[in-house]
Length: 429
Image (cartoon, rainbow, N blue to C red; front, side, top):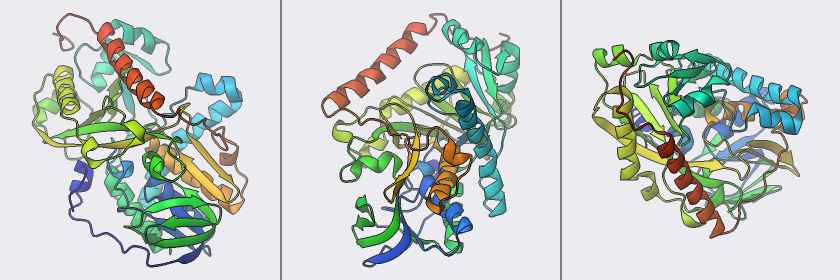
């Protein structure tokens, strides 16, 4: 079995669990064996040990974004606190961000409690400002740092300032998702891999291997939601690609910094993201790959040579290095039409997702929230503004294809317009 990411490759060959073998009756059926589905199973099995729970996964747990992402457990949310305040009020907006910040710590607590060594390191995150336009955006943000302070964290070129947040941990995402799968299995949750979910609704999940009847059905498919019957326009699968270098030598790390394994990005419009891995590589990713007509998802879309080249060139420009690239990979993430993630339960069908790439910690919070909703427990989590939210559907094709790819192109142009024409220099040079 070929591993689709550096993270999964480090785990060695994976032996899939057996698929579903005919029809099944359970209390809760969960479609999707990534973070959302597994955290839901984890907290639900703790809250109600007597429930029978089945997780249904088309490939194997962690095959999707949970085993391919940048390894940021962050308190980031794709909707700003200002927008949340306008929609839901200051108290609920603050509660949303506080809950996400706590989720960063909860991931570490739960991993430690279950003996999951996922290279968790809570060093925070730094968003660098490296052009005058980026600096103007950064100055008004909480956690702003001067050029010297930001460069002391991450020694990139042309640092003019930065925004630091303590609410982020770097981790090994595949170790986390595979360890979580083992933990829920130990609690009596049944996991069926190699079992593709075809459609779901109140009371039943139809799969490639049989029908699972359940009192509660959970949709936790994230970027793969579009492949589910009747859900083509719920979440747009947009690709994010990554590279990982060979381990870098100590002199490079002395210049680059990230001594506490802080994650890093900058204020450009086209998102980039990186971390220093536990084995001293740079794992670095970014957007820019095209959206594919009809929300299609294909293995060939995981690799776009031009984007991989851009990512490597960006590392060279940022850090003055020309690293050997050991791994290249990618995969789809789920984007709702209004960029607002959601969690809910209605008529026996629960759902969570649409994290827009910030799902490692958010999925943990979503799993705890779904466990509350399914067990009928009122809590601070069930009152958060994303609970019960319904994003409007994406436009039909070809409007969807034209709009998403036009936005990607416009984002590239905006960054090019803001880029200084002068050559890059390192801090202090």
